[in-house]
Image (cartoon, rainbow, N blue to C red):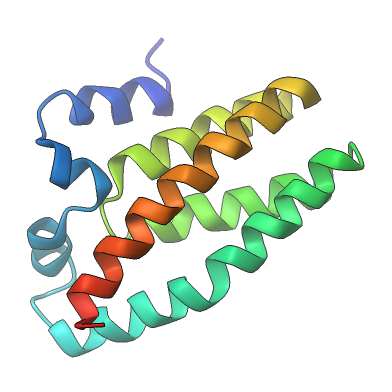
Length: 130
C-alpha cells in the first residue's frame, strides 16, 4: 500500500534541491499564475506557520495528541499549496509519529521541521523581495 509519505518521496526524487524547498514555478502554475494571490498566501503562511509549529511543539511536550495533530495537519495542508516537497514530507513523518504517540521521535522530527522551515522562510522572503 502506497502511503502519502511514499508519494511525496516519489515526487522528491524527481526534483532539484531548490524545488524541494518550494516549487515556485509549479505553485504559480497550480494557482493560476496569479502572483499577487501567491504573495498574499506566502505572507499568511509566514505569519501563521511559526504559531502552528509552536502549537505542535507544545502538544508534543505535553503529549497532547489533539493539539499537536491539529496544528501539524493544518500546516501540512497549507504547505502543500506551495509544492513544498521536503517540508510536506517532514510534516507527514511528524503526523505519523504523533499517530503512534511516539513523543521522542516526534520531538526529533519537529526539530527537522524547524530547520526546513528556515530554508522555506528564506526562499519565500526572496520571492517577496525582502
